[in-house]
Length: 274
Length: 292
Image (tube, each protein chain N blue to C red):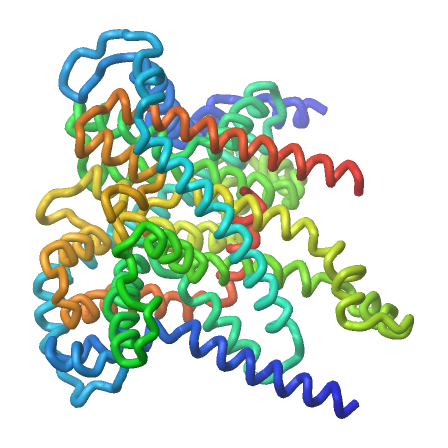
């Protein structure tokens, strides 16, 4: 038994050392975000001499932080709302009505997941530009188009587990289809909605390429876009850069600690889809 | 029976429920996809009226060494990532599923990088490779830590490290789910039969987590081929476009050089690569399901 104990201790130590090495980049960013440029170059790995917030002030001002943050938040929230509502409605119609068109449409949604973004982005931007739709609402609509496949797929799977007798009973009572969906089915789909929301938050909040092609104008840029501009402007001003990165990382890390348990379910569900 | 018939008869509600997502899918994905295939056979530059020129774009790609380098670079990158991410991800999963102290802290630590967008990850590691590595190299005189990202080779491994750091936590979570679903009495039984740790892993654990291996392998593979943000913020193709991956090459061709039709032809080739990967995956997954 002693041998097993020693092995366990060694594994624990190994695991802790590995974890600390694994998150050391976060340490490096954080400590350097409080240093002056000179201090950063002389003591890259040490703790800062003082908790100076000047870098944060400059970075927040240059990132247009409040504007970029609210842009990102609005786009993420609206996209996820319409993806969740519309794709659950679609999945409900496709799963409950058994006929040729529902099978074919469901197949179109799943096959569309194979198309990589890069093979549609050039015509997409050109066409939307023609109709002057390269705006924030245009972007939200695009997220619906790109996100609906996964949404329909996940909801369709969940709906198989909800008995149709519920619908039938409500229909006999004279409920309309929309009321059945809204009052009975949608609340039962909550776990799937959370899974989908977690996956889509991580995708849309961090997305760079699509917004860079669609809303690359002063005033409507998202956080990832502002970070990109910030770094092209301040190459080598790493002390400011580290403060900017800390600001960008913070919301995601907070989100992670709030949604930790749901996240694992979401990853598994998302992985199976691939 | 009448009620039942009414229930299954689809009315206008059926199409109303489907319309919003189907229309957005058609407008955002399907139409651009089809137009894109058409554009790849034209001389379109983003401004002119496209004229059909047949296979000229594809034939011209034969001499585009930068494009083929980017495909070769991406393929090499994918192989390195698949091996590293799956080996380390599985090892981490094995470690944190043992009943050891602080295992939840370890899971959180290993998963954390996966939350952060590729663009930001690239900038973080740009600083680490260029400044921190250089500082350590100057202090300790370890030669290979100096000059990172200034050569093709260090750019390649830099990209592999960033992507692995991000993806290992994700793959770990998938392996954990499969490992935790293994019935404990199977492990107990193998212990009673006198199996050592390696035999236990090889003959009991590994066959049961094989499906996780397929899933993780293909996620890593297709993510490697679609990688863009990390490439842009870490190396941006430097030095001299030698660390450019397929997606960055397509992007530069279309939006920097304004050769929209050529970029689109490359995008069609990229689609074919991804499609082949996916078809192989579906085939393998179905084959396993049949065997089981």
